[in-house]
Picture (cartoon, one colour):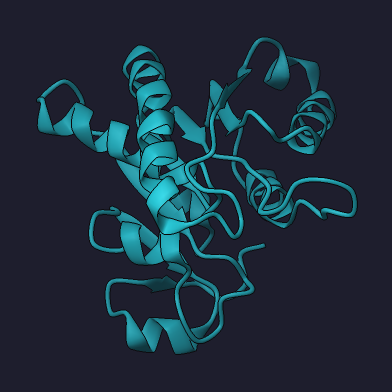
Length: 194
């Protein structure tokens, strides 16, 4: 079953980010979610992309992807917003608390303004604060936001830190290896998604 069939038709905010920054970074998370986006129908509009403020490559990939769509599908159907990362690679856990709270302070007004039906994310440094903001909309009775998490294809035996955080609160939790489905019963395994 395709992810678009399972999830229904929502206006949604996919969370795009790169795992690493700087020269030689491959943008693996961005590439994965862009491949997922290719399989979703045009009914998933408008699309609100949220990327890390230090991420320069993802914006180019988003614009290229959106401009490759037929004009009627992409014309004014997407936005790109930036927020601080929750955690940089190799950042200490202590300083991660402060940076995550900072990212949350940017995420709350953004998500409250956009009021997405769904947050679709795949594990980069901006993911958790946006999901928390989406969950808060529901807790306050303002709007139920579906949290959809897609674990990276690279995670074969264990979940990523973001996956471990979001597993209990996500509405849909996709894994791309049956070994993870076996360990995490809530996980949905549809084979390779990206």
